Length: 140
Image 1 (cartoon, one colour):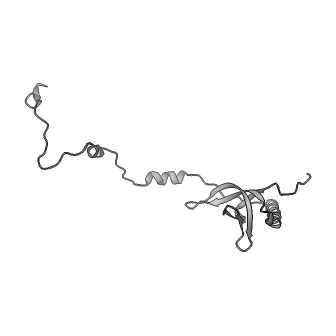
Image 2 (cartoon, rainbow, N blue to C red):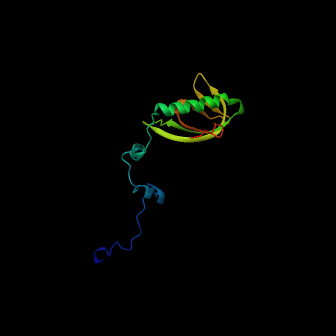
Image 3 (cartoon, rainbow, N blue to C red):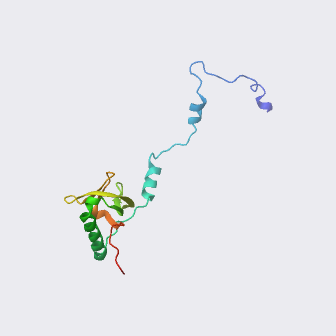
């Protein structure tokens, strides 16, 4: 303390040529520097999990086809069905399985889409499961 006795009580220096920096700007000087902009986002995207599309065996394909044909036969009643279907991921291989319940309004024979009364469209080759109360009950 003895070494600084001559300057300890002097007023804080302020430049006459440059304005004083705001506390916000001053604090920003000491914030962490992100040298690799977007690197954290790229790591999160790589770590994000996707599902592979299931390849159905012939038995399950036949069951789905029978259910789809039954729905098409009864399309005028706009049957309510629940489907599980695959949606491909836009950024990487794989995708996700989604569940949807709605009333079927129309079947597009040319493009193979089920159209629902709320505007939803589902490609039939992405469907892995269809359930509904309209299907006949079979004795097992």
